[in-house]
Each structure stands twice: as C-alpha cells, then as structure tokens.
Amino acid sequence: MLPPVNLRPSFNITRSSHVRLTVADLAESRNFYVNALGLVVSDEDERTCYLRGLAEACHHSLVLELDEEGAGSCRRVGYRVFFDEDLDLAYAWFRERGLPAEWVDAPYQGRTLHVSDPIGTPLELCAHMETRPRLHIDFASYRGAHAQRLDHYQIFAPDTYELCAFYSELGFRNSEYLEHGDKLLGAFMYRKGTCLDLAIVENTGPALHHFAYTVSESRDIFTACDWAGILGYGDGVERGPGRHGPGGMLFVYLRDPDGHRVEVFNSHYQTIDTEIEPVRWDAASLSTNARWGLPALEKWYFEASPFVGAPLIPPAELPQPMSLERFLLEQSAP
Image (cartoon, rainbow, N blue to C red; front, side, top):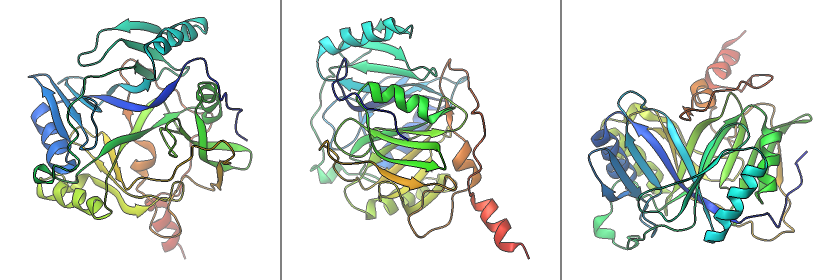
C-alpha cells in the first residue's frame, strides 16, 4: 500500500520549520497568535510579524505577511536541512526533475531555496536561522495556550499515493496511514523522529489544511479555547477538544481571523528506529476520532488555505467523509 522509502536521500531534510501566511489585518492576527495561542514575537514591522513558540530558539516558525487583497492564503511551508551543502544538493535534485528551484533572500534566515513539489506546493528550504533565547521556563511571560513549538503541516493533494511517493524519495517515513480498500487516503509522514512532519490527505489541492503547535499540558488545549472565547474568536473553535485515532493526541482546531486553521495538541510518540512498521487505519471515512467523540463539521474536511500561485487540482473522486451533518442526518432517519 505504501511506496518504498529512500533511507539515504540525496539531501537531508531534518524537520518542518516554518509557515508563511497572508493576513488582512496584521494587528488582529498578531493578537490571535500571541494572546490566544501564546506565541512570542521575535521581530515585526508594519507589514510582517515573525513569531515562535516558547520552546523554540530559532527566530520564527510562523510568519504573518500583510496582504489586504490576497489574505487567507499560504505563501510557503518551510523545512530545515542539516547543512548548507544540502541546499546545493536540493537545488540540483529539483532542477534535474524539472521542478522549480530558485535562490531567494529571506530575512533572519541563511541561504534560502524556493522549490515546489510535483503538485505545486510551494516549499522553502533553509539550513540556518538567527536565534533568540528559549522562553519555555520564563513562566511569568506566558500567555494564552503556551504553545511550545511548530510540529507539522497537513496538506490536501489530488493523489495521496503519488505525493507520498515523492516525499518518500526525500526520506520521509510513514508513522501511520489511512486506507479504504486498495486506496491510500492519508499518509502521516515524518523526518524528525516523532510521528509527524507532513500529513497528506486526498482532496482538492494543493492546499494547507492546518499547521500545528505542541503544548506541554493537556489543560493548555482548553486554555486555547478559553482565550479564543475571551478575545472574541470563540466561533473559530472548529473541532474538539478531542482525541485523534492516528497519533493518539489530544487536540483542538481553531480558525484564525483570516480562516487559517491551526491545531493545538499535546505531542506524540517517537519513531526513530527503522524496524518500526507504520500503523494502518482502515478508513471507511476520513473521520479520525479515537473510539469517542462526534465527527467534525463538513467544512473541516474540505476547507483549506490555498497556496499563492498554485492552481487547485481536484482528485479523481471527491472524498465522502462522515461529517457531523451527515452523521446527524443518518441518526435522525427513520
């Protein structure tokens, strides 16, 4: 069911690193991420805000870019590579396959490479960033949900298997996967030795379904909801709190002022050893609750942030998840 993994890839991606979002009101978005989630501002100007989690030493894991007309899109998702020479190897690797690759200047980062995967997902690779002090034990300055670090992204792709094969060639391994019959519906892939850096789910894409931050305590998940409500974002608490099947984490999903979806969850298990086999989930639907809890609203399964400049491609067959609306309709049927 899963494509083979290249355990010695041509260049070394180490982890998910950062995400760049467009927003309509920088102050409003800053308020959400600082005071509801608890992120820390590393630097900012009138058009850009750079944020990081409390446990992060690297300059930013979230970049908010003011774009009044194009707000609600994702510019790029970022990955770290280990050495600068990995960037040169990546440049050659993408060019050899006819995929875009160009060098850019990015503030607070070292050499930075822009590339795209085969479905057009815009990626940003770098080996170095400026650093700031970690604030994970600076308890007096804690705000909101005390978000600790960026963990992963989930993207929509028109063909999960084909995109899973691409990232498998780059050394991404699967911790878990969703299938129905002989169809791969979801792939949960990693590089950093936990169970997730990139989740791929079959749907119209490329699009960013969500990005996720870890918290230290389960109660911080509820704190995210409380502060969202206090600050006027209560209607954006979209799914949860609940527990996932794949991964087993406690979670909540929130929508920010521009509709971007962010997950807050309480971390997960290690997957470093090569003999560990991926966990298979038989997915009659895309509902991923673990034994309890209602399905998500239909919009959770289909709405996502488009990537700037990337045309959307529908899958051969649209998913038919067990949404909350469908569940309630079936429950009420005679």
